[in-house]
Amino acid sequence: MREIKFRGKDFDTKEWKFGYYGKHTEYGDNGGVECYYRETATELHYIIDANTAKSSLVIGETVGQYTGLKDKNSVEIYEDDVMAGGNLQVTGGVNIVNDKCTVTFKSGMFKLGAISLCSYASKAEVIGNIHETELSDK
Image 1 (cartoon, helix red, strand yellow):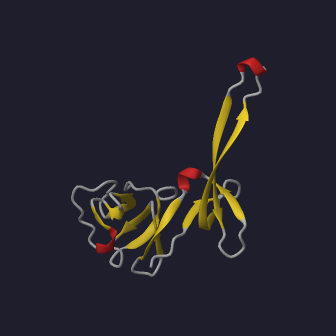
Image 2 (cartoon, rainbow, N blue to C red):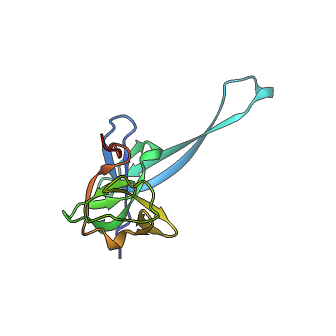
Image 3 (cartoon, rainbow, N blue to C red):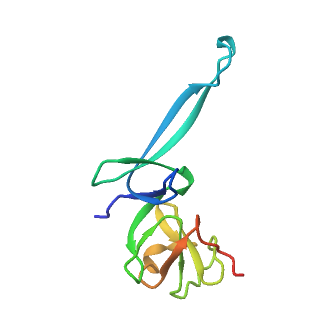
């Protein structure tokens, strides 16, 4: 069975946190007069360390799920990772620049472009993620 875990970038330190994922909506007022009261909602995203149960506030856009697979160097592969190598000649794909692909979750599976990640995971390597790695060649 695949290990269920997530990663996200800490809101304050910008370091990657790994563990369980939780989301909370915080409601509050906008500070106006009561008759004009409108609630505002803020979604807060957390990664909870499995060993310490310490939660870290993370940037929601950086949260990605572990795929349960490792690359050719035994590095864990997460959603939004950028992979290269392994002859990634993927047709009909998304976010492909030359020999680089982004790991996405679509149609109930993790994919590189339009194909299943399982087909290429052990042939390619993680070179970064969309939050830190430039996809275009310069």
